[in-house]
Image (cartoon, rainbow, N blue to C red; front, top):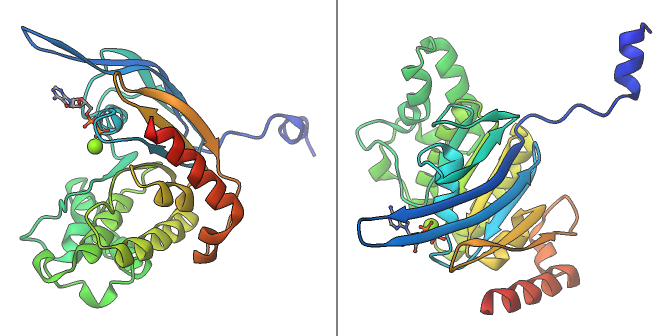
Length: 266
Ligand SMILES: Nc1ncnc2c1ncn2[C@@H]1O[C@H](COP(=O)(O)OP(=O)(O)O)[C@@H](O)[C@H]1O
Ligand SMILES: [Mg+2]
């Protein structure tokens, strides 16, 4: 073993890529007549390959925070770093999935998944390889030639996730992606997402106001409150890494659910 290798062996393990650092972030919406403080002093680090959920009531600034991390909106002050580099706009290193179905209706499922790759000039055979793999991951191989209007809500959201993954982002930013789905489909989508997260090793920053969803999916939950939007408390989710439906009945799950419900009531 040479000296460099020895040093690597004893040094700190290298950080997993996809680390988000949010430093002293403020956001105010200002018009000529008024000023609305949407976010106050948000500080948060999301580790590479971590699954972190932001849980909070409607209007507390969750979407605003996610849009700033996505680079779709500017903060009033403060900084967002991705692997130490300041975020100054949208980028292929961050894939977004929203609640609304944002697929292109005139493109097939496969063309929707390949859209970003095509824009970047990725050759067709490489695109086909990526989309075929992702169609398998989201279990929609049989629907590659279908158009969005032929799909159910859950299927459309699976395509939206595949489209976000096609660029091999370091981070998936998800804003209530399953909010519009029926209860059963929502549970299936949660399991599928954990499966994808395991395979792709991306960081996931997930937003929801659904307590069960937050606990089932996450390694860590950050609770936000409104007026102004701010972080109230943080919870480590102490459940087995493998989330089978039965974890919902575990005492740790139910205790955390009670605690979160209590906190959100105020
Ligand atoms: N472009 C905007 N101009 C003015 N106020 C806004 C704008 N976007 C969001 N807000 C306000 O900021 C607050 C937080 O909104 P949002 O981030 O959408 O909350 P959440 O996603 O938690 O429901 C809300 O009170 C909303 O009305
Ligand atoms: Mg929102």
